[in-house]
Length: 399
Image 1: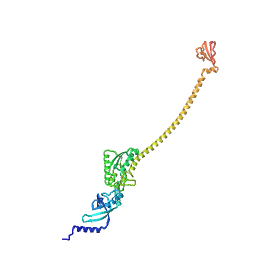
Image 2: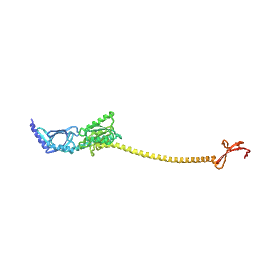
Image 3: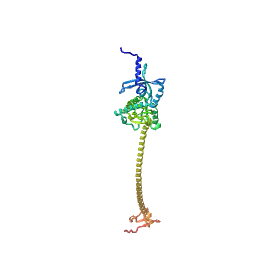
Image 4: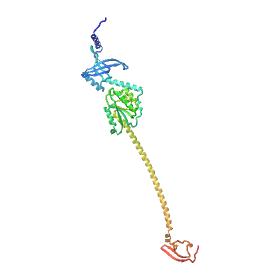
């Protein structure tokens, strides 16, 4: 029989081997598999490591952040990274390896490097961008036609988010002067649940579209936050759903300097929720400006036409006046001539000139010898009176 040793002796050998193999502390990269806090301030973490395909766990270890270290490390990580430690997060920790005959192998976490976690998110972001680029997803949603005046918006946000409140205030009719209908589809806007929550909200919008409800565009808004708080907007599945959505998707997430994968695949990316509202209101202002310009052009053209027609009318009026004056002058001349002829034929005028008018006793003019009876009475009309004569014709001398 081979030599035998006790379990305690075996554990002592393992402890000695571990102490010799890992002296002091070492920096270790791993993913958080489990995370639990203790009322005493201790934190218990299960660290895991996966194979290259990221499917199979190839290593696992228990780790502890004791309360004294946790009181410093946890707030420091949260403040620097912008998000608290959470399951699934890749971390770089400084550990002291401990081996106990009773509890086995455990790691005592002495320090955490938040910059590593931030870098991991950036690497993942780059992988997502490369994948979407290879699949031709960039510019797909941007090819959809956004109405000139979008009046019905499906808004995806958290009802308690400051960014949502800013957007709604800025786009309200009291603020913008434009009447726009909005329907909120609530979703978590940060953390690990945000991508799936936003995808479910997009699916809810799509169901309403299938049911006959009309929306002109989808708006996704969320206010600013830290880099890791907004890392959910670099999620592949979320970006893919936005790129392939049947409506134009307008995105306003974060601060002025933030730019995420969802911004790259959206129809229109704005820097902030307020900027999205400004963009939509700007579409109305642009059309109003075009209408104003068209109105001014029409007004100028109409004024020109009116001025031209007024000129034509004035010229026609002048010609008409001249024609009327000439016609009146001609008629006056003719009238004067007629008046002159009438006056010239007036018997009184003849009498005034020394002529005598002969008439029978009834006043009928006698202009021929044939008009004179053999005897009777006649009247001689002279310029200063009438002479009545009795006569007897003795002899008539002809020419």
